[in-house]
View 1 (cartoon, rainbow, N blue to C red):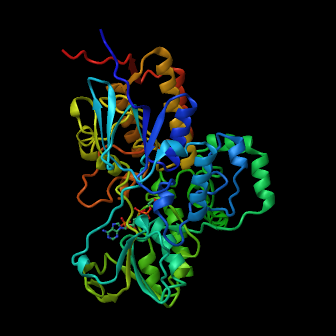
View 2 (view 1 turned 60 degrees about the vertical axis):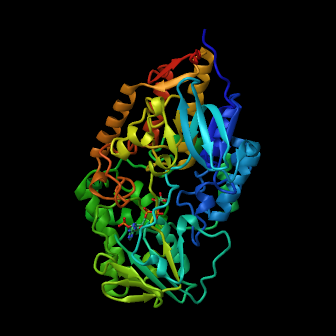
View 3 (view 1 turned 120 degrees about the vertical axis):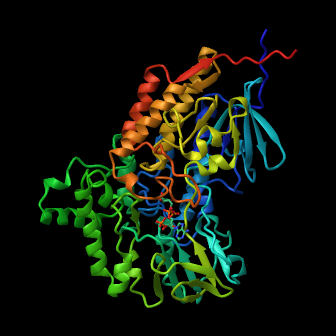
Length: 546
Ligand code: NA7
């Protein structure tokens, strides 16, 4: 006597960044009706919001492209080794149109909440437009880095200059010519912004909390020949990407740092420094982030470079990182250390002279007053769980995701894509997938192809209610933690360890799968081949109302 209530859509997708765009496509292609909601006024996600000067994607365009379609890969031309923001946005729009998914995406619409209805067995999704829609499936493609971290500084509201955040950049270009600009934060965003602004501004004050290991990206325009070559050998490229540790060529090596003499090691590090991209971190030696002594070889090499490059010994000292190399995300930016030789660039080491307050005219530290027209936060994101917690997501019996994951302390997912007690909810590039060791475009494909396959299988069985088993998420979370414990990553505080947000409890289970993208893909392929045993499937039934 069971009847099913028909939802508005088969699937509701949150976000129209690259993961949302691909999610809509993959689900539509398998015959599901889909609606995506995007809070921005355009598609592109990360590339839509992060429009700061100097932005470029630090994964090479060679592999930072979807590869599921030869035609679409060949139909797009990147101009440079690393894509600038405008090209990344154009690419997101190209994919949206080429895949014909634009009509399925509702822009300017934020998802406020999503509640699983235990009786109707569907998701009720509340939007900031006042609308409410229902879907059988709820797919969070909301991005691991999309809720900003904006630290508070006492008196900031009295500052008469302009406050900006790299990930909430104004739509109109900002003219920094002749201005005094302060940048807080020296992660990937800060490092790119600092090198881009230094030549324009009158004065640049860099407020650095933790010094970083920065190796050159070696940006350059692409030649016609190399573009043709990569397009002609797409099968090889795809195979290389799928069998590499980070989903891109040149990420991974079998060699240990102890295979070489100190002189040979320096030659290897120097060659990687000159090659650029992720070569230094990922293609020199395989034990840099598992063995402290090996780690020290790479760290020392970068510190020697800093001493060589930076003229002022005091500035060089402040720029020297002391934490373990590669335990924060490696930064690939050209001319970073060189920038501190410019007479208009000043480095402030916040651990030596912390902020006291903002003033009407700038920033006061314990050592000095800095006059500023602009204060720019390049302070990163409430990563991984931040955006998911911001939405009011509730599974069975009204259980909130925040409670389920105990405020982020115990994040558990089945294979990084779903949670027990949250039936028919799926994650694309969510916690415990490969977000910290990913070429995102391939990571998205691998995640979404698995999810679409599972949905298709369940539909064919007549079992449209899909729920990860409790056991599968416990096992996967334990695996993620065990793998992380074999690395040095837990020894450093960063968004990788979930330790970058003031007041947010530190996770006790690692929030990313660090076995590499190839092993992750193989784990998903095994799950598929074994009949998706991690997921209990039942027919959709709805309670008969008395
Ligand atoms: P990141 O990598 O999280 O970097 C944030 C930077 O901001 C980093 O230097 C932080 O110093 C600094 N920070 C954060 N909070 C503060 C406060 N309260 N005071 C001073 N400095 C602070 O963010 P990005 O946007 O650069 O990059 C994010 C990811 O995007 C990146 O990893 C790539 O995957 C792409 P800390 O090191 O915490 O001491």
